[in-house]
Structures are given as C-alpha cells and as structure tokens.
Length: 402
Image 1 (cartoon, rainbow, N blue to C red):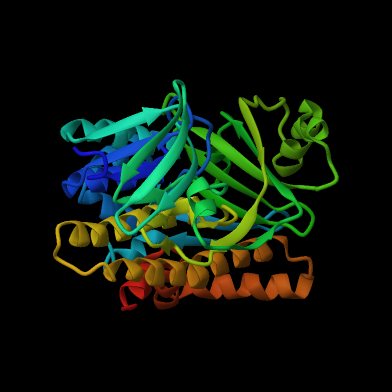
Image 2: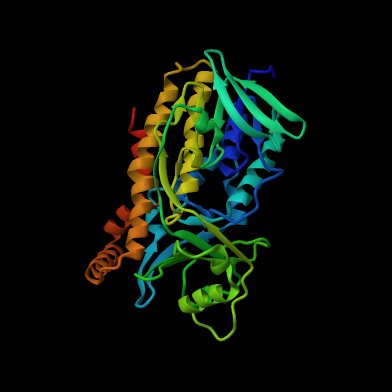
C-alpha cells in the first residue's frame, strides 16, 4: 500500500481491533499504532450484550466468543440487607435477538481473538511501542506523529480512527471538547476464586446499599475455569495504601459475604470513574470511537459494547466512502447516530444505575424495589425493560437517525 492509501487505527485494545478487523473485512488497508508492547492484560470490562454478538457474527468470531466466555441467562438485582429483589430473565428477548443472554468474556481475550482472526487477511501492519503524540490533517489526508523505539516517526493516511482511550491523543488533536464530570469516589475491583455461585448468586449481580453498594460478576479468568470480581465504591479521602491494605480488603469482602476462612485475593485494581462524551466524533478526517469518544461508570456493562458499536458503525460508512459508493457527508452520520445514543442511553442509563445502587432514602429505595418486582412479575414489562438495558433499543434508536 502507498504511504497514504490506508487508514490509521490508534490503539490496540478491543475497540481498536474491532475497527481493524472490520477494515480488513471491507478490504481497506490499515496500520494500527499501539503505545504498549502488547495487548493490555489487566482485567477490565467483561460483559458482551446481545446486539454486539450479532455484529461480530459478520466477522465470524461470535462462536469463538461463545466457546471462551460464560453465557449469563439471568442477572440479579439485590439489596445487601434484604437479599434478592429481582431476577431478570434474558430469555424473554428470544424474539428480539438470536442471543438472548449476556456473555462474560474479558476485554483482553476479545482483543486476542480479533488479533488472531486478522491472520485471515493481508494488507495491514500492527506496530507496537508506537505512542501517538499528535495528528494533523489537510484536504488530502492525515499525518500521525508517534514516538517509536527508533525515535519519532510520521505516518500518512486518508483517515485516522482514535481508539486510544479516555486520554486519547487523537481526540486532543481534534477540535472537540470532552464534556462531563468525574465522580469523587473511585471504584475498587477485587478478584477472588471463591465461588459465590454456591450461595445463590447469579453470574451477574448488582447489590444496592446506602453505605456500600457493590457489584459481583463471574468471568472466565486466566485459565477459563472461572473467577469472581467484586466492585466497591471507595471513599475519596483514602490513600492507595489504605485501599489496598490486605486487612481492609478482607474487611470489605467479609462485610459483603461473611465466611469462616479468609478470602484468597488474586488481583486488585483501583480506577477513577468518569461520565464524559466528546462534543463531536468527527473532525474532518479524524474520528474517535470507544473510550476516546465516551467514558462512563461500568455499572450495566455498556461502555465496551458502545465502543464496539461505534467501530462497526464507522467502518460500515467508511467503506462506502472509501470504495466511492457514497459521499463524504455520510461520515457525519456516524457522529449524529453514535453521539446521540451515547447521551440518551449510555450516559443516562449508567448514571441511573449508580444512583439506584447508592440511594440513601429508605422510602425511595423501597419504591424502586417495588418497581423492579413489578417489572419481573410481568413478562411484557420485563421484555421492554430488558430491550433497553440489553442495548437493543439503543441500536434501533441509532438506526432511526438520518
């Protein structure tokens, strides 16, 4: 390929690889620039929703996802003191999707699967330890600057897609704002092999409490044998030494689920939580997708999926422009569709999820619990609710925007 007869994908995470595999599928040459030495293995997102599984069918990787991941047929909303409030049955979505369930599969495994699938294609390159420092554009293309093991280099392309996370250098090179806010508290994720499933927990659980809510998930883990993650909100006044203190982590776990023996903690992670959306996803020949375009709290497992949907939406439109089937203005539709649903669904739903879990008003909490009980007692209401939280409604809303 010539120096600029390509697309540059910045970021080698799951969204970057989704964009890359789509480009390869559509016959568009690309170069991926990744700052790190390999796929980032630290456990992060792990939920894949039904519409996402449908999209990945086009790339012939969904069956691999299903073999590697855990199918979640239902999920629980619980109260730490009262126990189970509602169990949502995703099978009620059988008329809406071929995949009426969630899938638990960690994001780094998704990235590895997509990377391996690229072996079916040619006309691309993946360059690691290439940290992008800036992007400039003109009427003919873009020039991407990167620090590499061999010193600073520049790369030319027709377009650049920034899939480089919340601190995106591509977004910082665009004429856009990253509007929103950061929560005061941080989230602590503790990973343990202890089997909470033996005590009636589903594979996915949201557990409300006015003092210390939590979320509990089972993911395949390093050996695919299964491991549990517990998410806690952390007082912003605590230092990292206090947060990661083994005795304090043990206290949190025992407070959530008491048991006679200490917990075996195999991993712990702490991260800041934001709610932000870029003011535009396109600036000429530069685009952002995934966390570079929007970041949110993880409650509901939507952020990574929204990033996948961004990548599918953008590359579908880009291929029509690339192969001269459509006008360049089609690329503006990517911004209108994806930014709209990020605001209407991703931000609204994840903020609402957090508020419900931490609600401190007893009467309001009980009203919400009664509402959930009413939803699960009525299959029509439950299906309507699940269409929203399983992201089906958001996909339909994006498609309605022209």
